[in-house]
Amino acid sequence: MVAFFPFRRKVLAWIAASLALIGLTACDASLSGGGPLINTGRAVPVALLVPKSSQSAAGLAQSLENAAWLAVNDLGEVEIDLRVYDTGGTEQGAVKAAGQAMSDGAQIFLGPLFAENARAVGQVASGRGINVLSFSNNPSVAGRNVFLLGNTFQSSADRLMRYAVGRGQGSVFVIHADDAAERQGADAIQRAAQRMGGRVAGVASFPLSQQGVINAIPDISRDFRASGAQVVFATSGNSGALPFLAELLPENGITTENAQFIGLQRLDIPSSALSLKGLQGAWFATPSPALVQQFNNRYMAAYGEQPTAVAGLAYDGIAAIGALVARGNSNALTGAALTQGAGFAGVNGPFRFLSDGTNERGLAVAQIQNNQVIVIDPAPRSFGGIGF
Image 1: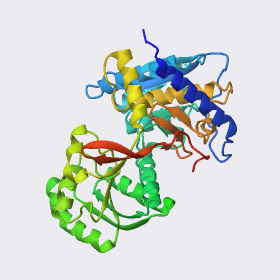
Image 2: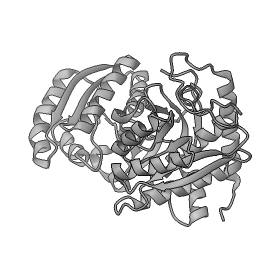
Image 3: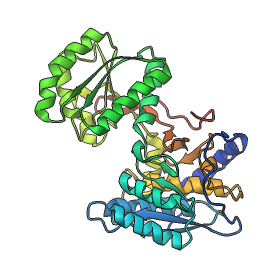
Image 4: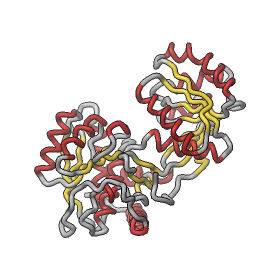
């Protein structure tokens, strides 16, 4: 039995505010209108696709499922018929699960988790005109009927670049590992600079290995100083080369005295990274810590454990579906409805789907100060326009 707490009232109030914005915002006529028409007099069938039997991702699957049920219970009079299907974490399993869900009458998919699984499900679902809200953050699988719930490099890059330009620090030097994901991150930073009025003074890469970083840093440091950039914008995370960069860049003359360090990925995961000397003063984008803590407390009270970092995406997906269904329109789950500009109220802040299937999230800018995360520019509570 799921307990209800004051958090529920806050979420419902926020969803109501989001609905008010939806009513005031016109949909862009150029957006896709694909998607099923629903029966507004019956519960809406929603299929949750998660890797329940995957040895490596079963914990993530359970956390996503738990969060989805919390969201369903918070929708009040909006009726969602949520059914859970196991993908096994494989493309074949995801396609099989999607087929069964469609046979059961699913009218929208929430999940799957992994990018290639989302691509496969999107292809199967497109024949039935069904949209897919994937937990992935990989833009290569977005588009047509696949929408991403995961925070993207572009969303973080735009937020950070907007803040940097606003502070007169819009000249950046991009550092990335020579692999596919970080090249995508570097591209996102360059697009953000163009959008926000910044300038990319230089781009440098390094082989994704310990020795590769060590060998490359002297030349990168020299090129940075010659570029005249004010900012070092790194795409690496703490699970990759970032700890080496945090140590080696200061040793090679790039310090807080001559450069502002910005991380495209979360610098506070794991929390032990907060003690890295080279990350003191660094900026990164993050969901509102206060909202994240509210959700974590609610989840802990209901299930007796902390949620995984991706759990909130499942809550957000149900919240978005519920907000659209609450309007009582038969076209609530079409592409045009999903991409309305006002966006939706999520447990980690506002978010909206863009016409290319990616998303924009309302993020805060945080700085590491004395081994702690300090918000230096709060996350927005809503979006002011119709998006890109």
